[in-house]
Image (cartoon, rainbow, N blue to C red; front, side, top):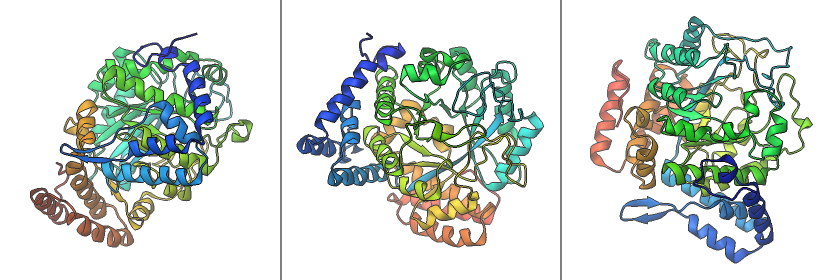
Length: 482
């Protein structure tokens, strides 16, 4: 039996099955211990100090206890504190992005994904560089500045050289006032050498979903292909950070395995990155299993309801307070709206999960990786966010100013990042409003910008932001940033 060691570089030691099982048993035994739960909840509240706002975060055991708690008044406190933490470190900003699918060629046999090798019904497609360019122009015409590129694992059709070429193409497209300023990458686990190449190509965050931390289930769910190697996959983030990538993004696919087990493993993985590299995950995604081409979610018996989903999200926010939490268009408008108040800080908008979907007038379905539940346009999502008090942010300044990895986290943990993020969000929102928004969205948006400018606490920063916004509105000058 592997001994639990968060500082180990071996997957079975930093994600220890025995430690997870002991954690879940302890959480179950203490789930009605009101005194202990109150003590943990009090620990999580943001505190003002001479150095800024700080938040303790939680161990995987403490977080698992909150997730196991069934007392309604304590659960309500979890939600309240999750929103309090999110506002303390991210304010009322919500970062906007879109996925871009480059290729659905894949050699793996993942039983929950329609791209699996044995699926002969789905058309296989790989974008040429000219098609990538058309997709990017379509995304820029929507108003996007930040992409997450996706591709199946296929060393012949999707080698690292192809991914690097696509990244270069994406960054090279300058259409009207449009630019993609940050490319995040969600591709299969690879080598330190390849991660260095991705770093040199100027990527933002490297994203890789674990899918499940339960090794036995993992091997059954990935019966064939290179992804079958649990250890290689689980240790990928260490190799990425060894390769110089500062920001990495974790996630599990809820619905594949029992959610309490997955949650404990996810928090343990975050603890491991902090213990070994001095910085935890930049983002954590919370996707749920959804219907796709030949995938029926009902075939899996570990699905979670909306209440449980919201509770998981809130507990992640309490456990890893400084991490960005991402919710995609897998979820409906109502679920996404609810989770925005549970700690979520990033959402996709106007997403298409098919290869080559954005350049088409009608949404194609034949190459989708999963059904998109929220099919609203980006403009509709932006207006919806503002009508609910959130500032849609297209900001990519931290990545381009070198505020990544431990530098970003130190600024975030001290609360100082707000001095950059709030005005940057307002300036990039103004760009969107001037260049892309509908009249209805402009009306809501310009009113929000004016109100929020007056909430910037530092007079000098406020004056600079006001002048920059005036320049954006009266000229083609763009990309101001603090």
